[in-house]
Image (cartoon, rainbow over the protein chains, first blue to last red):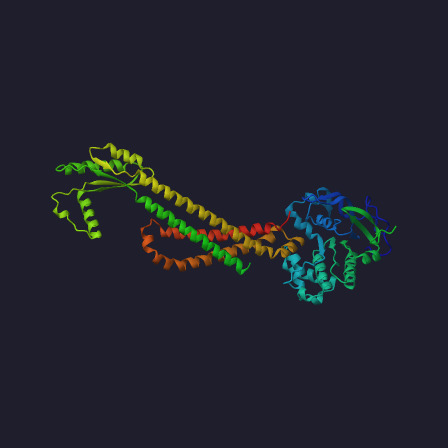
Length: 256
Length: 279
């Protein structure tokens, strides 16, 4: 288990993270990007020569101004887009080599959380979470306990039978996190999960993601929330104009 | 999907079926008119030799009937010709003076119906070559050419309009279904993101498309069935003379409406969902 303290040593992308204290062997990377570039068909260059590796159990912030390429990078990880150069390896699979029909299996190993929650308004909290299992053909008997477990982790067991529209923004985002968790993924990708929430609720969501990280799930979170990033002293990957300009433990802004 | 999708489906299928029926009626009407085209050969009329000429005329009729271009051959005897003439006079209310004639002046004739009115030349040639029997072949060439140019335009025009209507119908139905799918694109996106397979996402939409198609087809057929009685009574005189096989026509319309509804419903859903399934 990793925790907030003591801070891990400075990160060297070429070698991967130093092994966590007391665990011995280096954890294998959950995701690796090598020389990744992405140019859209309209000629816009979104990413250039990205080298990035996340070890199992890390909690990493992805920061940068709008249009720096954060969303494109996250879309590459769930194979919503394919890179124009380089390779993207998630959980041991080179995404360019994963045939289309295997992509759903890949996505089940990744939990995704969005700024706008993306919940189905006509379904209850429980059904929204169960939806992620239903669409993958999970037997009914296994759905109920898995959903209850996920709702318990995010603290929404009491609101299970409410509709998303009756919930606060924070509760809606926790529902979305429960849905991302219900497959028991090794990696959670969060795209501005606190972008629509007020500061207090944002902290609750961050605390929840940290707790999930402590359960062993790797978390990659794109955010503009400077206060959160700076105070947590985690690994920060900064993008500017499609390049990684900083990759170190620290705050939202460069500190030297 | 919505009531609007089903309503659009019904209206479009009715439009398609209506134009299909119009086209069938038009084609049958054209065929009917073309079937009326006959080559008439007046036969020689030698007083005293009538019996011998009848034998020769019957022999000629057998030869003509053997031509592949010929559909029917009818021998009109002198008596029959006179009877027709009298009938015509009576219809017009004119005084019948034929009783005062000492001899029937009308020639016997052969009426030759053609398989295709454009293929008249071999028949005319054969009839003209037997001048010992045939007195005169009534000139039909110009009439036939004018008629076939008109019927060709009608046939082609009817077909073009039907194809255009079919395209419009397909386009509108596919677009209606697309709208219904667009309304649920968020649901599709969520399904993709949580790892649903393409097939899993697609089948409810395909099923709905098929359902809308069958429902629309059923409603359209019901409307057509309700209309068939009154319209049929109204146009009985018209339809009766046309070489239409009503049983076959009804079967074709049912197949057309159900096939189009089901096919376009499924195709429209498949195409619409495909654009949201990504790369």
